[in-house]
Amino acid sequence: FREFVTLEGTLYIFDFYFNQRQNLWFMDILDDSESPQLVGGPIQTNVPHTIHLKSLNIPQGTFVAFDVQGKEKEADTDDFGVRVKLLYEESINA
Image (cartoon, rainbow, N blue to C red; front, top):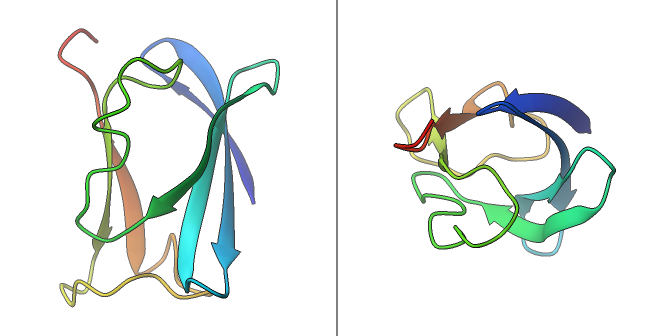
């Protein structure tokens, strides 16, 4: 699925897709002209996503997926966005 989100004053496009082989959700980040800025980033529960990628043209804050049921399990095909939520913490400069 695709989401259009403004973070820290900039519009980004997020593509989310499930990889059956790895049994994980992945995220691509595109700029507002749909040019890929980050492709194939795995979304893992309680693992900061993009924290080491500050030089890319992507939101400079941190993405973290968390299990709202407290089980710390990865999202399956049907519960990303339901049981497992993706949070964004703004950068210090925001």
